[in-house]
Image 1 (tube, rainbow, N blue to C red):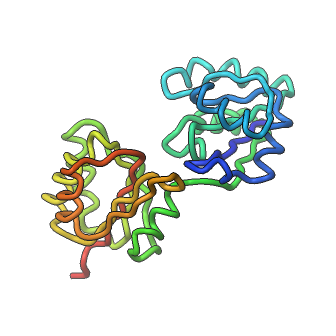
Image 2 (cartoon, one colour):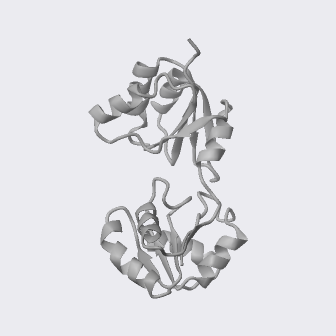
Image 3 (cartoon, rainbow, N blue to C red):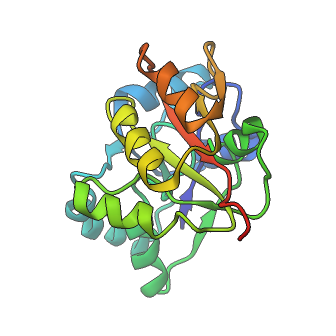
Length: 222
């Protein structure tokens, strides 16, 4: 059986009892970084074989993991933080397993999306989660252009070294509107920077680190 298991996004206590049980019962744990996952597993005294499974080797590991699943092994997939398969490895394996009639499950658990939307103070529903914006500037511009008139609250993951550029692009396309940049959710330095795109951009110019989630208010009704 294949099980996608959410792991803490900050505080190591943010894991469910069921997730710990599934990890203890797994024959193999596929994880992004064995060193990062090792910290979590050591805290809960879980001693299971690990195999690296990340965005750069995901396709190469598919056949091996699928064979083990067909052989009746229980495989748990975890990411460095949060729910695997959402902007993290896991979805391709899940899709293939479903196509091949294998038993799969996805556990509920930690994710940065809902805490960020609620901490933003913006309308929480309906909202759209859009993952990371496209890497290439041309595609990213079209991506943002297609969202500027959305009637829904928008939620993005943003890389710290790209946040200033992305905010400048969004400000140009969206205009100045209410938003929040939520960083380091569930960690010691958790912070919600609320205001407008302009005020958040000014704050970012002073320097910002950590895992970032940007939440933007819907377009104003016409």
